[in-house]
Image (cartoon, rainbow, N blue to C red; front, side, top):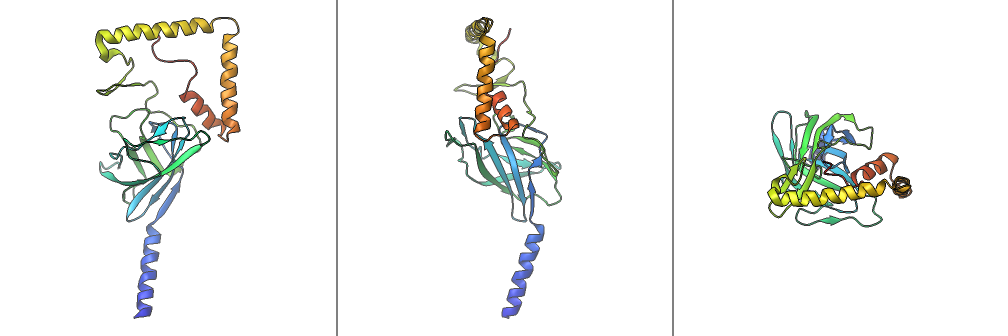
Length: 240
């Protein structure tokens, strides 16, 4: 009986290990949060585990428990648990010297035949959400630069809602026009300031210093460029 038990255990271990599959740095078509990367996908009979790596953006991150996996056949695989990241409204705050933070999210097991899917944290989606479209396990990511799903989006948080629009002041009516004029005036003043002799060179030096500092902290050139683009030193928004 002891030998039979050992053989049964060995067979079950072998069977489970043959199903378990790991995919390092899979290709992703477009994303929400460009500072967040999928580092690894582990598939097994019991669950799907996705390991994420988020670059230090001098802010905080949190996970929406509505996060799920969508497969091409229209099925949804729900969130089970997370490690290394709190569930909103709790937050994880980056430390000053932290280059990146790794966390894991567990989902119901997807079939081993599935090689392409979407990870959706928020259905409507924004450039701040952990949304990954076209995760392709058959291809590997070859760059640290990710393509945004929402390249022109501006998001404004209010007590009532998060409004996403090309002009974040549209939903505010007359009050929005007041703030729009104030903001435009501030941007115009800043642009006039930059027109003064030598100011653009100063800004260029500041951007170069920021870029070099990121490299010194251990970021790759592509990662440093991604952070620089996501935190511009020139204000963007209303231009008309």
